[in-house]
Figure 1: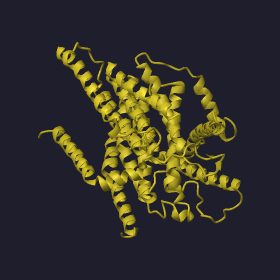
Figure 2: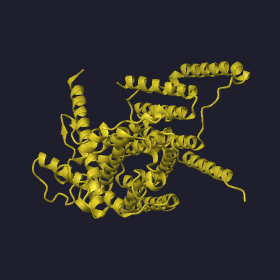
Figure 3: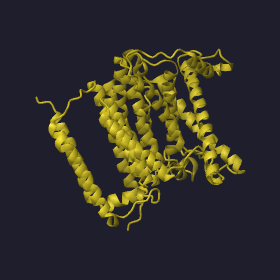
Figure 4: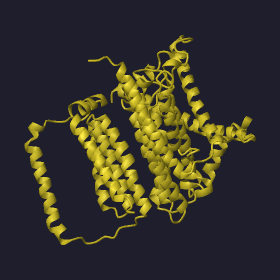
Length: 164
Length: 352
């Protein structure tokens, strides 16, 4: 049951990601990204991270992607033109991506014993567990991250402000 | 397949069908209620010809909408134009899945009065609400019409802004309960009837009023119905829609109203519990079940009535007033409510 759900939503995730790259119209790409985000949240749920799954839907598919579509609608962005791209991308891009993939696969496979295994649907991290880790054990990194986001907001306001 | 799983699937399917049918009937009759009440507020009768007191009007309206021609304008972006009403109605109907309607009465290991009892029920509700915006946003964009686009832009901005206040207003209740499960939230309000409801005994009335105002904006209802302001945008995001596609937006709006009523009942007014506590209760499991459903329906009906009353009474906001109200008033008050509530809870905790 869990495996079937995993296969369906992992497939949906990959298909959405490919569609995101292949679509020409920005709004279709944005919608594919929403599909990716939502299927990722189902994968989180299968791994037992229920709060993370809900937060993924509320924050990413709900708020952030609405802003994306909002901007696309506001600017009325049209169909993008297809260029041939730079030569460099063809020469360095594909081998580079393949090398990165190979390296990551090698590391994960060779270090499999130290990473441990995650089983689908076996473990449930409740919201209480998560908040205990986040607000007790990892309090300092968590607060520093929120300051980082605050700085980003201030930077955006400073950049967008009109000069008088 | 083993029989327990089969029984679970069958009972769940029956529950889903029953709940969806009841919800759609409730949607139809909420429309009638609105027309009747707004009629009375404006000193006229409202629908009165079809059936006794106009009671068959929703059925006739439904038949009319089914039989109307489904116009498809030339310039629309077809896939999204068709998808948008489906998203809107789907999200409106989906959120009822986590709402518990009555006391926990298991039958063959399945909860009778709730489709699915989720640990994070409240977050699921918020998530589905936040997905529902796409129905409006995409319908406005794909219609290829200035009024539709402006309505959709207004709706997206409004819903994102008010989602913040809505989410913050619920935190006080979650703090008091210590759980995101809707049954737990109702259970802690069940001890002393009216006095232990979050609204009265929990001192969450500030949170309740923030929730109510934010929810009116979320569902695009008057006085925050700017996305479909007739005087400025003809009909807003659904200008180009006709026949059943229009009806789906219409049903989604009333479905969302019912969901908001359910959530307000569960979080602030004790859900299915009686306002008199255990006084006057008793009898067998059947009477307990019916009483709990009765109280739940009465409370939700009160919220629907309030919605319509507000719509008949208040004028529409201006757009800048709407944004200023959301960001400069509701959000700070909601944050102050969280601080005050957590301070009170912290004072009551034993010192380690």
